Image (cartoon, rainbow, N blue to C red; front, side):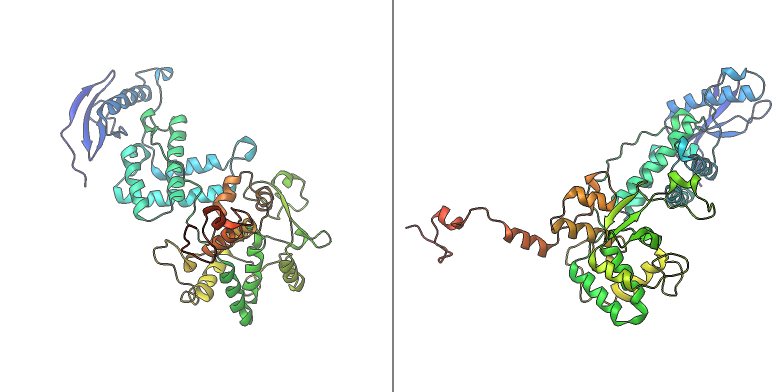
Length: 420
């Protein structure tokens, strides 16, 4: 239990308060007044900021007890429990898109972020957002780093908490001292996601085809590797999306047309980018599509038992049936942060992008196929493996038909060379 320090008596405009510190934070105790006012966190470990917050607390208490007119009060200072604040913020971001709300997938991602922060706060004995300050976020950043989260994930976690607290202040749920100033360096374009090599993908397909029970997984791998689709997009792919006559795949973002749908019970398809996209069908993927059975539910891809394709199940089976058994054949290089065994379903999207880039497909075309507006994401997905790097280097011709030896006066037949 944090040690409670000796209190100072402060006489504000309307009431008397005993100010003390518990741990690093300042608190105000107004129970000696008539009527008793209770105890409150002042939301800061800096005395000046705490006293500023006390002025607002004193005014709010006076308004609540009829000693001051409501219009005199400024920002309310009231304890905001962590769970209550999170529920309010999630409801705010989940408002209709027409008024600035975000996608359900983003709200779902926020849930995992806040769940992680709640676990951290519980260990720290923090119960309200009033107790969260710059020092707490610094500690949280250290906590995330020790958990070995990717830099981009750490950036997302901290930015989400900061943004939520800014909203709390703007809504009057926290005092101005709750507006935390913590500059964060944006993640660069590099990624720690492993990118498969062609040999690794071919080997995974070979094993799947040798085991009839994994035929469904071979179809999934071909689909992911030759389209760049996310696993959620592949799982939602339906036969009407396939135009065999034009040899095209059409993925439509349906949110703008949801009000026109006849069947309101059918789930509206929403792409991550919020945009529709069209791209050609690769010949090997077309061959797979032409041999796949048509299911009554209209979906193209299904799980091992014929049910809906679930990303978590696919990931677990991929690890168990392919990645672990092939670890010895494709070991992680010495000194490398990630290797074959660390690859996941999203690695196929990286594989698709890298193969396109190495084969000379233009950046703008790849952007269109992947559904990105910015080339920065294409750069993030592109990986250059050592073998491809060697091949690309040997294709170059820096010095023309006579070679570098003519320019330096060195004989091609004599690697050591000597001056004439």
